[in-house]
Amino acid sequence: MSVIKRYIALAAIAAVSAVALVPVAGAATHREGNIVQTAAAAGQFRTLLKLAKQAGLAGVLEGKGPFTVFAPTDAAFAKVPAATLAALGRDRTKLRAVLLYHVLKGKLTAAELAKLRSVQTLNGQSLKVRVTRGTVTVGGVRVIKANIPASNGIIHAIGGVLIPR
Image (cartoon, rainbow, N blue to C red):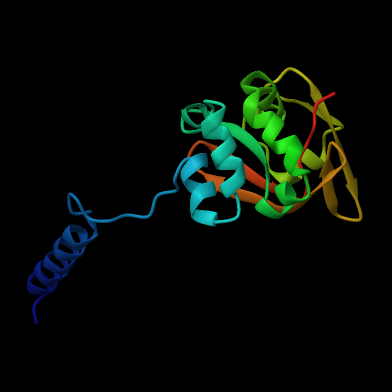
């Protein structure tokens, strides 16, 4: 095969390969959902999402962000007395204050949190951050699963519900 034919053959292969790599309009691509979608897909934050909708905060957490959310699991909410949850459900102002105590402006990974002593929440109060034997705690509550990525931030599953002072 002559040199020219080899170059033509290689050019044809390169052109076909390049076309194969171009995404097709409408083709499915993997994208992270926003915080609400990601939490819903995880399946362990149903109570948190229900309360966020009640408080009118689901739209905020679907927004641009970025946010860091300390998300109590359903098991964490199960530890809260039913009367306390019911009272929060009746008082939208208190419910918003409690839920915003779980949200930070900006995206902070567990490694970034570990370098801090405290963080400012969206309800205006601060949370103490501690690291003990590799375990991060915020406000005295353990992070049980860190760094769950979302398109508009990050979620850290926590083993308790943070209650503002």
